[in-house]
Length: 104
Image (cartoon, rainbow, N blue to C red; front, top):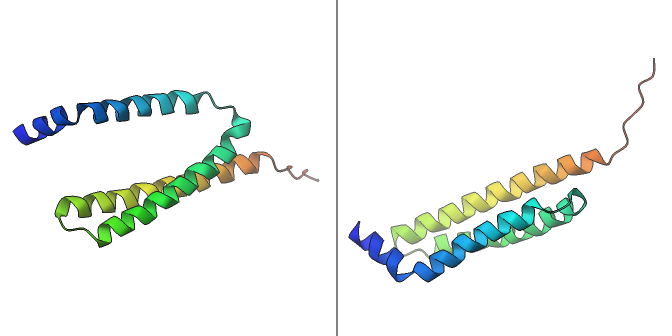
């Protein structure tokens, strides 16, 4: 426990930057109009693809259990983000398709 507290104390500036960037990202994304949602999802999927590749490389070169766990988590979360992004993008594109008229 003492090691964890000293880690957080020594890296408090970095942790603060991460927390502020998460808050800022949530605020920015929540105010994006729906017209721009699909292009942003494509960009997010591309970034997540890079994270997946980085996680695979990190896992392959892992020397400790912590590095291996972080690599597996990066691959897992990046994969979930890509799959979820494709599902959301597909649903958004379905909204723009014309519906077939029902004939009797």
